[in-house]
Length: 498
Image (tube, rainbow, N blue to C red; front, side):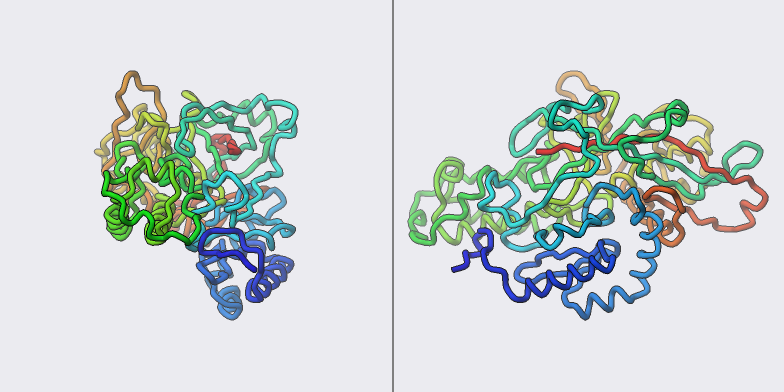
């Protein structure tokens, strides 16, 4: 007899629909459609196109999508930038994908299903619904015998309700470069800006001596919902109790409400993504008022209604949104944070004292680096120099459409959500934010526009890449100008295995 899926147990019987979906997926991937994934949406199996972020709920819809103009345009870009011989070693669910075919039919990514969040912080395999292999081809060869010289120790990170020191293993370099237009040695226009994956070996020694390393690095994780923030419950297995005795605790005397992690907004652990989530969480608090902290953390919850509400609240809480692309972050997919290499701290560490940090899709962090570099280069084009992190823009000079009506200029990479830079701060003080919310929203629009233009006109490179394109408003504006490619910085990538 198959176990109950709604309680979060691993399924032991595969339905006919699932078998057919897996067969279709295997055939698609054998034909080269390695960017198609099979995700679970409640009781349905959904084909998901990573290139277009398009869910397809049937074979017919999937076939229509693959023959559509939008998909053909993005596939044409992917063949140039993502499907080369040196692919990005990440699978973040929005741009980077796993191009292997061996294990794909064994993987299912929870896509909003009720049981999905339950597996996220389970220590054992009993609750696992997603089986995700986090191994990377670019892992250091000496993982089993020692530490790589380029590995780092990052201290004080909030992971699964605890503050831990974690080892970040170096997995490779990314090279940021740009195609520029110049007049008499002075840069007048940025045509394209990209990050090219080089792998662990990195560039040649001659290039390393000339191209500087970035002051910030990218640290990747396999995402789960209480990574970098407070969780809902320490042990979700307590929700998976027997259905007998459902009303045993219903007559218990009312005690204080159990603490809700969404109340800790000052610690950067809040993830209120919408008014609907807020109202739902408040309703859960009212229902759960009979269950105090001690009961939730020490005893089995036998009331069926309470368990259902806890699952609902946990599911809402687990739906973290990437603040760069506004897409959901999926359990088991690769997520990334930003590291200040000078201080050895994640950039959010200067904005809170609890070790909390923000996560984004890996590709979104790469795009954020490129956006910051485009702004930094643009500021140099406008003013010639700039030493502060930001300054009020006075000149009103427009370049590439990136400054224009923007009131502030950027001189450093920072967290897209909390605006931390990871600097060292003495005492109990925290770093102040710089940009208003309206300005950060404009930043996100620029990232999106640059990415869309890149899809239509990517740069052809030897290795896999992703980047921005800034179309020229008038072809005559750059006529007669010199064009050159400049290697700007090398970005280190690290991996934390938990």
